[in-house]
Length: 239
Image 1 (cartoon, rainbow, N blue to C red):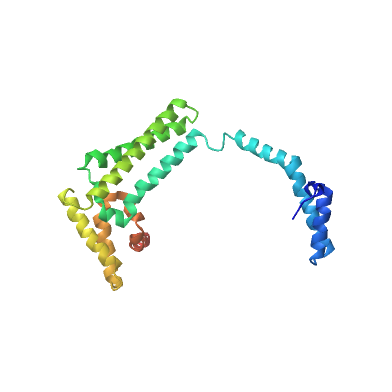
Image 2 (tube, helix red, strand yellow):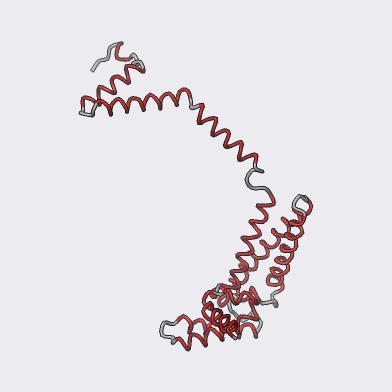
């Protein structure tokens, strides 16, 4: 096949659109649809070449609006979000039965290297937050809060790692280990499908009593013990 010089000439935009419309008509596409498609092509091509000054201005204005609102997230908000995330993880170690039973070393104050460190840094972060919230524009207090959150998060991550290594092994305080071994047995009974309602109620009562000294007020937030806690609250109100 040979090409003449005329074949290499790029058709005009108008010719290209006209040929496109004709091709649609030849394959049976109605004229109104063919013209609509052509109009759409013209619009798209115009946007590619000229841009869209209307939407462009809107987009630019939207970006400017966002950046004017303290860049959406300021340093204080980021620090508070990190603190909330760390505190949520720490709370979970008090309410998740599997974590409590399998890795109780995180609550064993005999392990000062990480258990006590978590408690101390958690309190320090809480106090630093309160100080910053009293003076939210204080750079010094914000820096102190940020450092406290960093220390809390680091201590918690280290404690989580160490607790998962130790498990419910012999390195635990003997009293704590005995309590958690008994708690593990109670959890097994509680989760058995053949446990009667009466046995389930007695098991939840015993489990609550065993865990309360370890997790404190968080014991009422343990999901598996919710029926027992609800019953206790209802009984107390009716007295």
